[in-house]
Image (cartoon, rainbow, N blue to C red; front, side, top):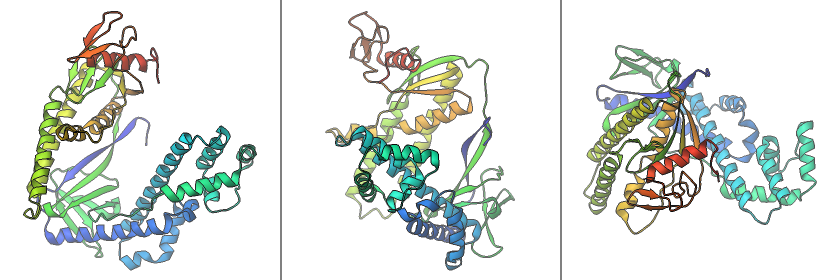
Length: 437
């Protein structure tokens, strides 16, 4: 992708309900797509196939030779996309497994620093990792081998290898998918025309026509999401847009993210002040509907109205978030935005109403949309990790007191809104003027 462009996802929707016959033809593709992915998961998800995962053409050739495509009867335009989708999932799963083990190694007090270094080296070097798991001799290039021999001389390699194999058996998960409502599609398998899209199906030279709500036409790999109960589909399209740059975007802005007020800047300006009210209304409705559904589960044969209203509420909430983020960027004109990492909601607790509200907090969506919008406008985002960032005085660094949303410093007498003080600390630490923990 060119450095002056960024990828964003746009959505297309069907204009008229999809007939049962056409929907079934699409479901047939999704079902076979699922079968192919599960076949790849089983065949290549283990330690014996680690050497084949990159770049993946070995797997492609073996899948072609296996004759599995003819068995499931899936057109090639879908078959190979399913194969590479599955390979991407397998690679991601191995990355998650390695990250988990790296964390466990760091927390293990029984290991010496040399042992931890050796294990991290094995996890990082793919050839060494594959050899250890498959009980093979480790063969590396001359330069890397010198480093390996130096590390191996300081530890009991057999003990380290047994530990690593044990952790892989314990934490690595073999993948499986039951999704029969989604598949990817290449440019060769669709055609835009007649205010809609023609999608290839399993029958030779046959396509189903789906009228769309817009006349936009794209030439890229698409993702098709099926909603059989609602007789609709959703098309996700990756689009590369030019990064915009503005000469007057020069400010350095620190922000505090909150549940009730979305963003508060270091200058005290607020954006998304109605977010808390919208989120509480949304979470209260979810909690009420969940309680009703549990009490009358046998009587509820379907939840079509529930999902329709839930989608409307989410769209309204997301529309408000995007509107306020746009206002934030237009008003503040930032060159850089300093932001503290968003906290995770705490599970449990005695107040179920509060737990429901926090669980529905759109913190992840806020972060994704802010990141996307800043990238599109060439605005840098700087994450700040901090301890007591909301308790320290942004003037002198003394631990202050908070009451009623106000912050007061007992040392220098500084007073401000609690969120404003936090945003000032975020900016201060992001610029390197404060302590970063």
